[in-house]
Length: 457
Ligand code: DHB
Image (tube, rainbow, N blue to C red; front, side, top):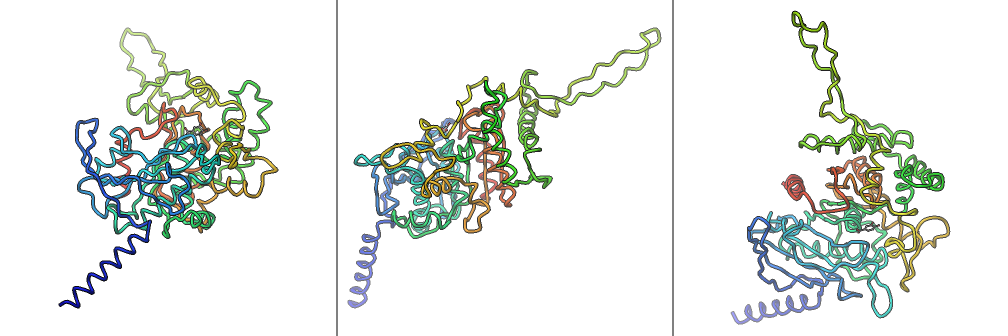
C-alpha cells in the first residue's frame, strides 16, 4: 500500500515537472466572462489570455494568444481563429466582440482563438522585428500551439477556421494555403514554435490584399481607362496579360483556359452575378452603372373591333442581368472612392514596402529586378498563389472568400485569381463579389455562419 502511494506520488511529481519544463504546454487559468450580443442574448464563456505560443519570444506585447471557450463547447467544437491584422501592422491578442465573427462564433458554440502577431511597426530596442514574413510566422506558431495542445484544450484543432480582413484576409489566405510547407520550417523552429503541424480546416478571407508582387499590374490592367494618363500606365497593365497567360487558370465551370484574351469576360461574369443577386433580393440598379438586362417583347394584345389595327409593342426590361459595360462600372467604382495612385502597392510609403523593409525600418521595393535573394524569398513566402498547387503544402479544403463589388483597395483579379486557383486545385470555395460592399470584413454574419455550419456538420 505504502509502495503504491509513494509510486503514485512520484509519477505525479514527474508529471508536474514536465509540465513546468514544457513552456508550450497549455495550463492557463480560465476566467468566466459574459458577452451581451446585439439580440440581447448573454453568452457565457471562459477566457484564457496572455498565452505565449513560442519559446523564443522576441516581442512580449504581440506574441501571445487568447483562447475562449463558450459554455457547452466540447473537444469536437470547431475553433475560429480570428486575426486582427490590418495594414500589415502588428495586432494584439484581443477579447471577443459582440459585433463581429468572434462574438457570433461563441454564440454559435465555436471556440475562438485571437492570436496577436508582429507586423510592420513592431520594434524592440530600436530594431524592427515584425517584417514579413514574421507576422505570418507568428500566426502559424499560434496554429501549432493549438494543434500541440489539442487534447488539453477544448475545441478540435482539426477544425480550425481562420478569419481575417484585408491584410488580415491575406494572412488568413496564407494560413490556408501554405500550411506545413518546408519554406517556413527553419524560421518556426528558430522561433521555438511548438513541434506540431500548422494546417487548418478552412479559411475565411475578406478582401485579401494579397498576391502583392502582381497587385500593381492587376490594378493598372483593371483601371487602365480610369487613369488620367492611360498611355503612361499601359506598360504596367500589359505585364498583367503575361501574368494571366502564365498562370494558366481554368474557368471553374467550363474548364476553358483563361487567357489575356478572355479574362476580362471572366471578371465581368462575377460582377454580373453580383448584380443579379442584388436584383433578386429586390434591389434596383441605376442605368448609369453600366449593367444590361434581358428585354422581351410583350405579347401582342388581341385586336379589338373598332380599335387601332395594331399596337406598337415596346420591349420590356426583365430582371435578368446579361452584361456590364466594364468601363462604366469601373468608373463608378472609382467615383465611390478615389483610386490609389500609380503604383498602388510597390511605392515606398505603402504598408507593403514597409513590411518588406529591413530591421532598421527602411522600407523596400518588392517587385522588379535587383531584389536580393533573401527579399525574393520573403516576397515568395507572402504569396499564397505560390503554394496552392504545391504538394508540399497542406492547403485547407474549405474556403470562404469575399471581395466587395466597390472595393478598390486592390483590384478584382486578386481575389478572383486566388479563388480560381483554389477551385482549379479541387478545393471547396464559396466565392462572391458582394454587391455595393467597400473594403470591409465580418459582415453578413448570417451567411458566414450558414457556411461554417455547412462545412463543419
Ligand atoms: C490594408 C489596406 C490596403 O489598401 C493595403 O494596401 C494594405 C492593407 C488593410 O486594410 O489591411
